[in-house]
Length: 309
Ligand code: HEC
Ligand code: HEC
Ligand code: HEC
Ligand code: HEC
Ligand code: HEC
Ligand code: HEC
Ligand code: HEC
Ligand code: HEC
Ligand code: HEC
Ligand code: HEC
Image 1 (tube, rainbow, N blue to C red):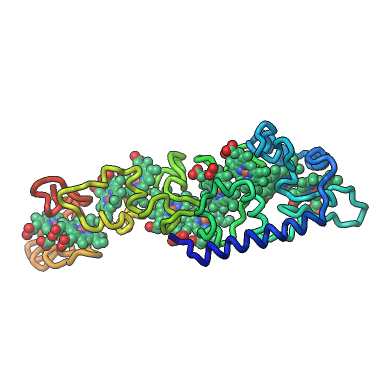
Image 2 (cartoon, protein in one colour):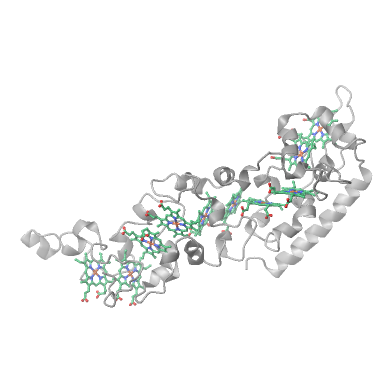
């Protein structure tokens, strides 16, 4: 669990403070006369009006900003009465309180607007999660105006994440990678961006549990296990991509010799005897330990103790 008690208390405190700040601001500010109709008089750009093609713009849903009795545009942007007034030449326009051209609200205050309706979707994980602690605005990932919010779609999601995660973008472009670019999976196949009880925002408690959701055959149980496999797949694999086949962190024999002694199984293709008689070491023929130890993930063969069958 990443979130400490301090985190819980701090986030509850922030929620309280920002709520009271918001009400104070709203008491002074006034809402526009005609709601969305006022706003749309000036903001008729398709980037804005596309909201009517998604769930937020759905008047039939009583909980949506455009449901009966809701505040429409101002449910998210805050009271915009002052902003909506025609300004005289040379006069600067006051901003709407949230996501405006000169909004002064901080991230916690902004997020509280969304959480006002979405706390139940976020569960207990968001408060204190990495993205919360890093002060991400909900709008850092979400675009509530888009007809289809890019971060919710498998084929566009990674582009949103890459805006901040350049290292993973570089990895995904390496010759061996999970098929994210091919749109067969997304970052959320392995990660829970709103928070999780595991390290690295993984969808399951450990790296291995996460991998088993798709690679079930690696779970076992096996008669002869290979210790590092049951412990952590990432000892040998780079989940985001690698220059080595099968997303390996290194190529064998170096991969194996990080942990296994070279005595008896030399790392040089020619041993002293090999050099003398001109024969390369059988242990490294083809450069690999896998020639003989082919069952590197474990074996179910009665005599598979050395993972060779
Ligand atoms: C009289 C025209 C007018 C009306 C009515 C109006 N706005 Fe604006 N709005 C503007 C202008 C002009 C700007 C750009 C201000 C600037 O950049 O100085 C703006 C900026 C914004 C921005 C920031 C956009 C950006 O590009 O940064 C938001 C959000 C916004 N308005 C929301 C609203 C909402 C919500 C309403 C209704 C309550 C509304 N506006 C009503 C003219 C209007
Ligand atoms: C569900 C919440 C929500 C509602 C409802 C909403 N907005 Fe927004 N709006 C946002 C957020 C969040 C952003 C900032 C998006 C971003 O930064 O990518 C935004 C951005 C904008 C912008 C700037 C667009 C740009 O990129 O140039 C304008 C203008 C705007 N909203 C006007 C409106 C108007 C007018 C309405 C009502 C018809 C409305 N909004 C309803 C959340 C909302
Ligand atoms: C007035 C209440 C309200 C506010 C404020 C609000 N939302 Fe929503 N939102 C809804 C409702 C209702 C739905 C539809 C839920 C459903 O159908 O399950 C929704 C749906 C969503 C979805 C899922 C969209 C989809 O296509 O499945 C996302 C993402 C979302 N909201 C993000 C935000 C963000 C980010 C903000 C703040 C900028 C915000 N919302 C503000 C009421 C609100
Ligand atoms: C780091 C990016 C990121 C941030 C920041 C983020 N979200 Fe999301 N959100 C996502 C992704 C990705 C999904 C789709 C999850 C999935 O498909 O498993 C999602 C899904 C949702 C949904 C719809 C699905 C559901 O769980 O019912 C809502 C509502 C939502 N987010 C609201 C919010 C709110 C409110 C905030 C700010 C407090 C926020 N999100 C911050 C990435 C983000
Ligand atoms: C196949 C599962 C999987 C997929 C898909 C995946 N990740 Fe990861 N990610 C992991 C694992 C496992 C870790 C734990 C650290 C490690 O072993 O590298 C991790 C760690 C991370 C970290 C933290 C890195 C660090 O050094 O602390 C970030 C950031 C990240 N992933 C972003 C992404 C993004 C963005 C995407 C989508 C482009 C993505 N991941 C797709 C499995 C995945
Ligand atoms: C607006 C910037 C931003 C966006 C967009 C964003 N992240 Fe992050 N993310 C961060 C920051 C900042 C951190 C903390 C520093 C780091 O680990 O890089 C982080 C950390 C992470 C971590 C590591 C968490 C940990 O506890 O080790 C993962 C995994 C991750 N993000 C996944 C995602 C995924 C998946 C998406 C897209 C759905 C996404 N992020 C979108 C800013 C962002
Ligand atoms: C959402 C499903 C999913 C999850 C979760 C997942 N994978 Fe994969 N993995 C795939 C798919 C799909 C492929 C591509 C297979 C193909 O191209 O036929 C793949 C390919 C691989 C390959 C390369 C196979 C080859 O033949 O080159 C390795 C290694 C791998 N995954 C390891 C992991 C590890 C380690 C994890 C956990 C961090 C993990 N996977 C989590 C779906 C997943
Ligand atoms: C000790 C290092 C090591 C560990 C730990 C490891 N692997 Fe592998 N893995 C390999 C090697 C080496 C290959 C390439 C095998 C080959 O070329 O025949 C491979 C290949 C794969 C492949 C593609 C070929 C196949 O067998 O399906 C997948 C998928 C895979 N590993 C998943 C996993 C998963 C999931 C885990 C964690 C449960 C894991 N690996 C842990 C070394 C390892
Ligand atoms: C992260 C460290 C690590 C890596 C990398 C690793 N191994 Fe292992 N391996 C172990 C451990 C620990 C054992 C269990 C040793 C024991 O039980 O005495 C083991 C056991 C074995 C055994 C069975 C030997 C025995 O005495 O039971 C073989 C064979 C083996 N590994 C081959 C390989 C090969 C081939 C590779 C490279 C593809 C590899 N290992 C990579 C840690 C590793
Ligand atoms: C030509 C086939 C072959 C190759 C190639 C090979 N091994 Fe072995 N290895 C064996 C055999 C056979 C045994 C069993 C020896 C015994 O029982 O005395 C063994 C035993 C082992 C053991 C068990 C511990 C021990 O010494 O008894 C480990 C660990 C191991 N090999 C690792 C590796 C690594 C790492 C590589 C690559 C550098 C490798 N092997 C390459 C055939 C091979």
